[in-house]
Length: 359
Image (cartoon, rainbow, N blue to C red):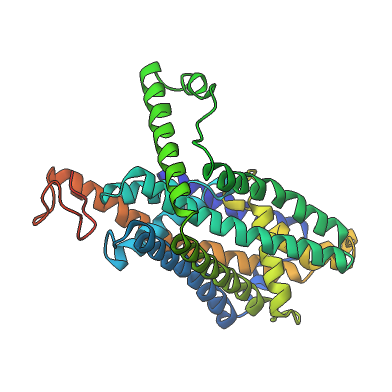
């Protein structure tokens, strides 16, 4: 996991480039003020906490019981988010959550279902907001920014919409070439086991899809999850608004649209954690509403100060908290493994009560 720490210095590279190529200086970034900066960071942390609430809610509703304490569930969600935020295209955190759920006695299919529902909620809400942001940008004259936002959003939305539609109708499997591809990196036996295990998990996931998409209770659960997801995006918008208003008057709607555009652009699998892309997305939306700026305007754009401060407040500050969470999760796993036996009071077949799954 230590290699993911590379994401932190990599995420600073766009700042250095801006400092060298524009009129922005570190002093300009600090000039936004401590209170707006702290408010922005707090709003972003609230966003991640809402995602943790959704995770716990999905567990309770889809699995039927709380697999662990609220604190440990939140820590697991934040630990997964650390992986998400330090990986291209915001992927990987779902595997941490699936592993944590499995370690706490949840069947692989149900664990994968919870993680998939989280992804779909994020993709559907994020895509809808990105489409609105793109359409509004085009309406306001920023055709380049608007069309770009829409184009980068369509593939992700289409893929996950297809997953929802097809998984509810049939059992999906990995493509036939998957094992041959895996054998280039693993032994034949390990590659075969990996493909078979993955296909089994996908089959279980499709079974869960058929069972839940025909259930009014499950649809209601997902609808509430979508509402929680929307509120998380609202706090993401607020995180920019409180800083943006230190430089110019930007309302909540424009802030929400700008941050939604930023998420869409940062999801491109180009940089770790969307470094550079997140800043580009939010700048493009705010700046290009009135057409493509002149080069001289870009160099002296005061919005760059706010955007850098926003990125630090909403990426680097929460990343510290996520790092603490993933270290707690990793140390807890090592501690449990070193004991070599279930925690006191848990029999091998019992349902986990405190997060230490029986083995």
